[in-house]
Image (tube, rainbow, N blue to C red):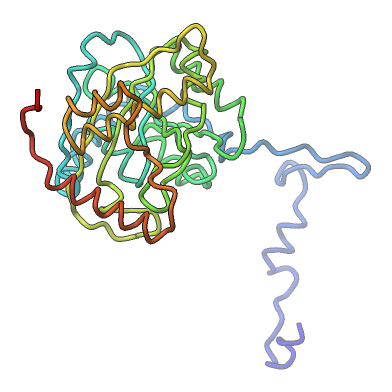
Length: 316
């Protein structure tokens, strides 16, 4: 009002003020107000872990997602990542839904997984996505649910709602993609695995398929906004089932060890990698426990070795 008086602007008549006209409306033209002395009702959240993704698993949405995955998404992955896909033959004995657990370095990991997982799992699969990142608004929630079949997973705490939704989908025949690290790697090396995939596998009685992804961090690592084309590899391992004497923590450790063996296989060869895995000598996914510059140096050596790898007969 002071600024209006200083500029000598005419004030709007009360009858023409849209705010005043709206405030003068009463029920039913306006939502009813809460009487004084009564606590107002709590509004149900429609974003984050509370976003309802059931519509994205109906037939129209599934057809649209299949067209996206097999069309522009596959073309984009071929142009950006040139993936070398291995190990799909290890799924020949797998019947029914499964949990595909992979290491996580980039936002490209999800589309690369969706275009690499073979049928019949590819088009009946959902992706466990961070509720605080992919489901922050209704727009990003709808896009995530439609394009990649995402369901919200709480990564900052153990969310019973998220676990129940994932378990119900697995029981209905849907497979699930999870990244047990909980987030993208900040420096290119792996992070400790969490027990969500192991817990769901034991709860639902389904196997876990370990998958190792290499090279996506070079294309679009954490903190980068512009992708840089490079080569990648996707190595699928044999399905793992929880043993009778294993809890979720031990099973998660075995999943991590198997993905580490797949990483060794991708950078060397299957025979040597299996020997080291049998002796529990597979290189760790988390890298050496040294300074940041030394870890970066070791990661560069590993990347160059992966680019120059060549298939050769094992030394018997």
